[in-house]
Length: 361
Image 1: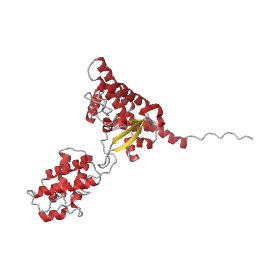
Image 2 (image 1 turned 180 degrees about the horizontal axis):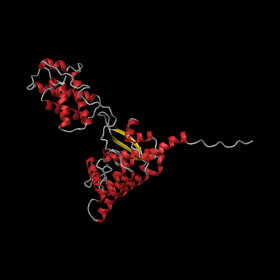
Image 3 (image 1 turned 60 degrees about the horizontal axis):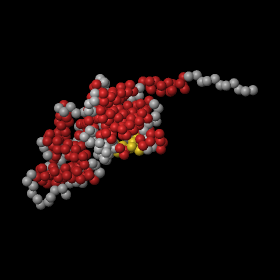
């Protein structure tokens, strides 16, 4: 149905490829995938075609082997990135070889050959681990978090004392990092927050209009729309920081009609890359390990709440994990916490039982 019958194409091979990609896009659209997801997958398929310099009906598993080796040795991509690209290629290959769509028959009639499956379990990377990040990745310790946030606050004082521009931006960024840690957010989730995302929580009336944070741009699953969640406020000092920023600092940026929580000095919304740049500048100034990233503040939120005895189910819902195993990966409890937990486990087994009280005559 993607090809116009009775029309002679000047470049039938290119027309066939465009028709395949158009049909694949329609299939994905029927599944409710986002436009950017479909565009990214199509771009990946076209890059693979450029690498092989062949049309899909000439692709072989050996092409995938050479391409995967090139991604590893030349581009130095992480295994998780390569697996993601292999998955996109597998989806396209399954689509054009599915007899229900008729591409194999159409190609054979037009070119005398047909596409075959090119990915299988022996030439693709299997997803065996829940977490595939680098082993060096870790959360902040409590002391490191305190140093980092104190340094961010100091930048505001320095800008004010020197009477130079940037004091408002420094105050905004200091509050932004407190929000990432105080509510366990991702970088993109933080950048896309609006003023109206704050709301009251009857269970925490003392926090006023900042008792609940509605995250509208949570991490999507398999190309679907962003997942929403509500994160209760539990750190009073973080609520005080947000309150002061919204009431006293944000109005000075102008742009009263703009919905964004974090505004730039030009009146636009801050971008994730700008958050990362300011974070790196502070981290290097403090000579903290390069393994620490803005996402490490989210890890710290999970770890520190676990150490404080907060229920794991509460933490899982707050950070938006679908399973407890994902939350467990984020948990890097300290040795003090582990020793305390060990003592609680050993006490009932090894401590002598208290003597029974004497019976009354």
